[in-house]
Length: 189
Image 1: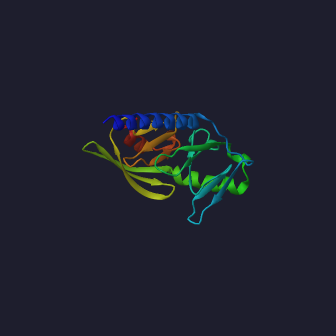
Image 2: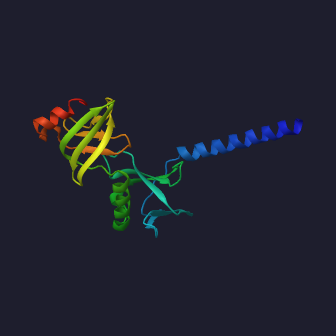
Image 3: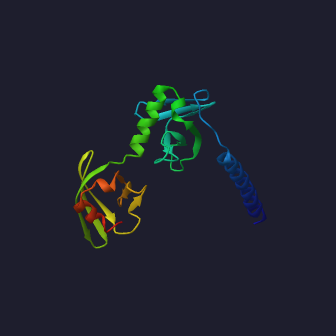
């Protein structure tokens, strides 16, 4: 029994040290530049990273300020469920052109946000709203909750709509919609 308690104490101390080390790593800001990082395309079409003496077979690309500064402070993370940050690209334009395009492609895939050009119908039923819209990619149907956080004001006229699956749609100019389309949005604004 005494040995089990000692083993438990050793395990707790070990975990504490590992946690402390991991916390320090998380708090350390690492900037990825053309001098210390190389991004490359994998055979599967993903992006890999060589940073210092470490190689990451696949990385995730996340925007820190997706709506206001999509070219600055880009977080590069491990591509597992923890998505631990590896480092930050301060300014995308300072990387080699081919690497910029690779990262932009990954950003477009992650932050795919069709622009709503026309609202044909929004039907409310049992606490959900069923949208039928025309986007820059064609006609689309999606479902939202009827809560107040479905339509987010990005500016006086620019709106963001979030569906129940987490997809985002943009209405670039509310005032450019016709009177019937605006009336359909009354439920949310």
